[in-house]
Amino acid sequence: MMRTGKNPLLRTHRPTLPHGRRSRAAHLLTAAAAEGRFALPQCRRCGAFAWPIPEACPHCLGAIALSEAPRGARVIAATTAEVPADPYFRERAPWHVGLVQMDCGPQALVHLHPGAEPRDAVRLSLVLDRAGAAVLHAALQGGTMSDPQLREMTADPRDRRVLITDARHVAALPLACALSAAGAAAVYAGVPEDWKPLPRRAEFEAIVGLKLVPLDISSDRSVADLARDIGDRIEILVNTADLPRPGPLSAPAAATDARAMMEIMAMGLLRLARSFGPAMARRGADGTVAWVNVLSVYSRIHPAALAGYAAAHAAALALSHALRAELAQGGVRLMTVLAAPTEDEWFQSFGPIRVSGRALAGAILSGLHRGLEEVVVGDLAHDLLARLAENPKAVERELTRDLF
Image (cartoon, rainbow, N blue to C red; front, top):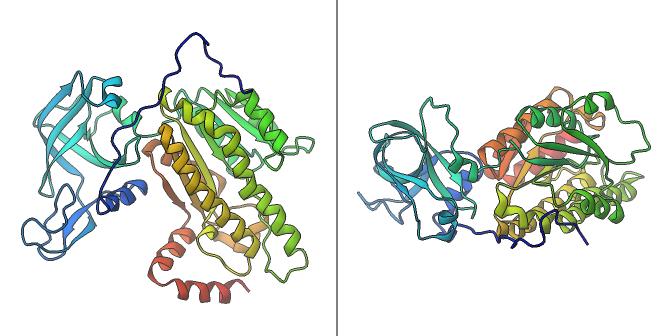
């Protein structure tokens, strides 16, 4: 049985969540917040912005669509809820809210920075709350004071204990350095096949607060053993496990490679979810808890020359959606990172379009700080996803032509 690491005489605190029910139209805002975009409802006919999202324009009854909007606003009124009616906010009282006049037109009730006063200029953000719903947050423009309310809606690694599942990944070392610099309380880095030499081991061991631990996510026993040892401590899990093996279905080793990749990317994620997921969901009441899955952009776009690799990442992406739904019950944020081919030696034929480990690590840390659910890394990944949304068949044909 997994050790809880807490006083058994104390009552276990159950996670509470703000109300997360939203209309289907309001989930357009959820999609924007998940990607870190500040997009508001705008009338296609008269161009007026609206808030909250209406079924039709309140001015001319025109159709509504999301558009990028100015982030500026000015505080009209501010108040502090000392005893909120909702259990989630009551546990975190006092909670600051305010009414703001947006530069783009409408007025809105927002989660307000505790230092903001009436007539102050603020900068708006569209963020996901702990229930996964899109809400507005107003921060002081140019302010440096931290906001505990915004921290509740993001995944700041400061004072958190983090597990990076594969220290051999190209982003593992820069990510560990970045997490330590960001104030993480502890960083654990899993080492698969720890009998093999770990490149740059000395640099890992020089990081303050980092500990290398054996972890092979292709092994039920290895995952369960580590979860038994540290599962009750982990507050942010970054799954970097990958096994790039390019090749079409007709390649001699296609079946063997596909099976190995599926074992690492898909079944490995399933093992992590079953061993670490329940404990992390229970910890959602203790503060911000997050799960990060680093996947390839080819989980969404499936070139024939990367058949097995794309299939394994597509399976992992499907499992990520299921895991997000389960972790959400405890208020745990799951962030999916879709990256272009990295500087792994298996992708050396992709040339200068590859993503460096440092760039990938920076994107992961930025996504945690902003509380995102979807992060795309690399110009190639951005381009492929934009073209996929416009014309999927054209992308399929172009990848066939380019990669063979």
